[in-house]
Amino acid sequence: MASFFSKLGSMFSGGAGSGGKENDQAVQSIVHEDCIIFAEPVREGTQYRLKGRIEKEVGDETLVRTFIRADLFASQDEAIEWSLKKGKQIVEQNGRSLFSDGEKNRTA
Image 1 (cartoon, rainbow, N blue to C red):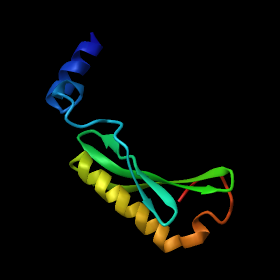
Image 2 (image 1 turned 60 degrees about the horizontal axis):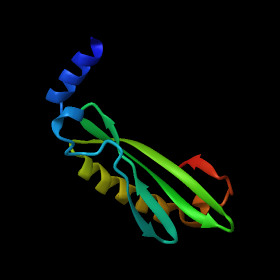
Image 3 (image 1 turned 60 degrees about the vertical axis):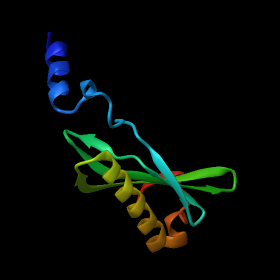
Image 4 (image 1 turned 180 degrees about the horizontal axis):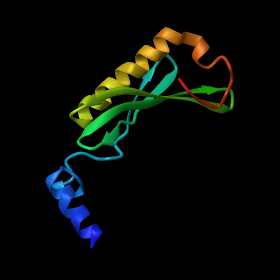
């Protein structure tokens, strides 16, 4: 019964029943200074939180730096755009030091 109310509520709040205008798992990427920046916004209610990851191939390994910020956006497209911008900024500000510790995964 709770599932019925959950589905009914999502129809009116822009959830799964809204025709799928926005993909909850949308990922977009760009290449910037030998890194691949992925925008992976997180849906929080009716908004999207800025989140992404930066990957770089070093030797035979892929090093990953994830980032999440407090910024919230009304649309998924806007959150993707700003996640890519923030990823570029992180790469430009940190340069080589972003991956200098050699750790496979960490938060930037």
